[in-house]
Length: 119
Image 1 (spheres, rainbow, N blue to C red):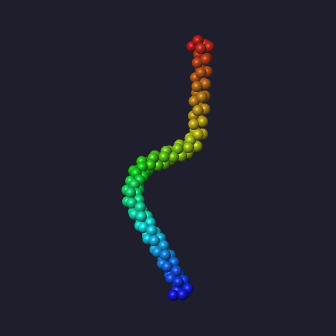
Image 2: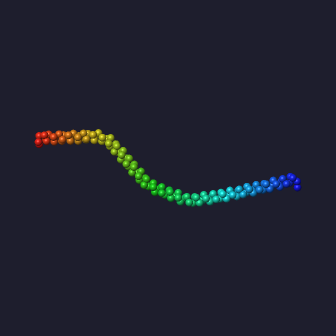
Image 3: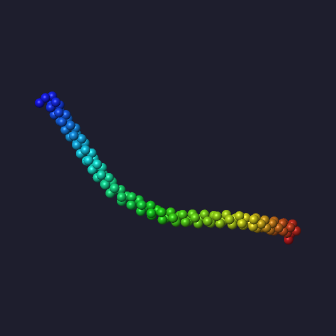
């Protein structure tokens, strides 16, 4: 066995050690992947009921919110109608106020005249 044979044996053993190291790493990575899969399955099993419960809660909350939305829509329509009626009735209300004020002035003036003459 010459120097070339010894070099071949050293190279082969080094290659075997490297192959064993790579195999070890592959096995460890495989275990890591299995653990990650198990953790993900557990997480999914625990999270699914929580998501379903949250969805149910949101649905329960949406019912009253729709009622409130209807109420605010009705209030908005009422306010718009009131505004429109105010713009229509505004001049009429001014005339009525003017007439009422004049009537009150006439009544006050008539009372003053009655008091002045003792009637």
